[in-house]
Image: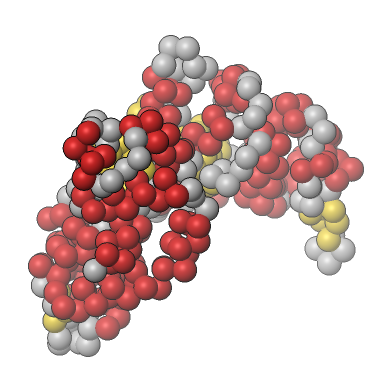
Length: 351
């Protein structure tokens, strides 16, 4: 990652959600003088549903991260983004414009995007822009978004991009299919889970520095429960660290209790997630949970009979939607529940 960013190349970064893609970029750039070398911008577009939303979010991020750095950059922003000039607000206390742009204010999306890239080109520092969940642009109703973005990104020389995505199949289609605008336009990195031994040594080291200790089996329990997903590991390890007194040892029972507590804490959100999907889709998730491991063929007669599913077509239809919702994933030919926390919660409801 450091080598690619230093050589000003664009990067496509793929991993499942919550693995730490954005934090990886921040980590790679730590220790440098950000004010002199670059401006880092993180844009999470997971919850956008249209080209105009993307432009609104991108414009706000560029305003907050770059334009507010100096009065010169602020003035340059307002003069460059002429299509939105009438929509800017004003802060009388700071005596500066504010980014109060609403979706309805973006009447010429393609032109506004062009202006944003013109502004990036004029910036006084190189811009490193991380677009998280980049595959979301394929779901916009507008049909030419990929081509437009590719055109402007190719032309800008003062910025490079990290396209981070969690839906690997879509990301691979976008960047490795000859028919797509972004074909072979970025260096590729696949981010897998940190190997257990490395993560365990890291966790044990921090406990030891504070005069505490943790059993390797206790770390193993958490690692296996969440399949090495960084966000969950860090959360449970932080809790384990906090409940362990100086001079004491955190054991397997302690971490199991913390995992159970975390599942209960997240239950309302997980229930709400399931409330938004159909009954056949829920049935498939329950079936995957009962399997307890990735499944090679969810349309096999044995799988359908074992879980009393309605039909092959019903399973195929449910799987397609669940993959769109990022609740089900397919990797190396095997299907599994995308979120380890959701899988643990579904399993706990069966107990």
